[in-house]
Length: 164
Image 1 (cartoon, rainbow, N blue to C red):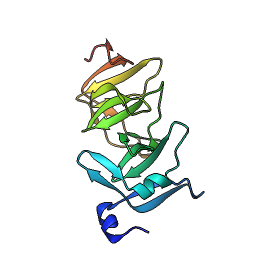
Image 2 (image 1 turned 180 degrees about the vertical axis):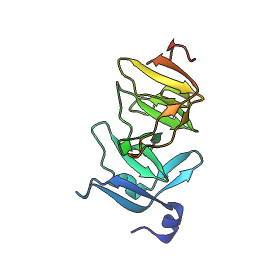
Image 3 (image 1 turned 30 degrees about the horizontal axis):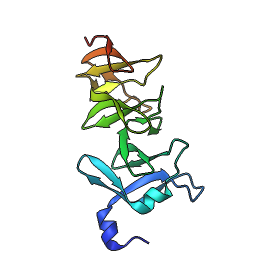
Image 4 (image 1 turned 90 degrees about the vertical axis):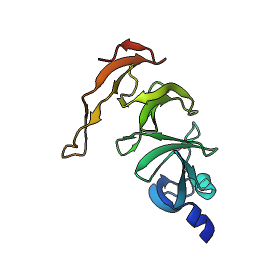
């Protein structure tokens, strides 16, 4: 049972799959709170998350999607196919202060968050943009990015096609 003080401390509801039931994705009250630019998951919810073989679980709260590790560290990631962005070639796109970078499964920054958008890695490369903006959604809720300067980076962050 969550005390009233704890409930006030963790005011955000979350959606996640719990390891202790077979309901699948469900909503849980008093799950998390914002702490500056990051998120803190309430200890009782951290214990309930269904972690994968890499020790990661995903959860949605406050209009955003996050990966959470067993220690409670979080990484905000784009929403993809109604869930957390996928790891491709060992990296996932992470969002920090409104910018996109690339991170490994330990949330170690591999490429600094300095882009306004980027694609997942494919064949060791990813398209990235600076100054691009999100266009309107289509009838299925899909949207595209337009404008700005686009280029291609490798897994070290080196521009293999300069931004233009």
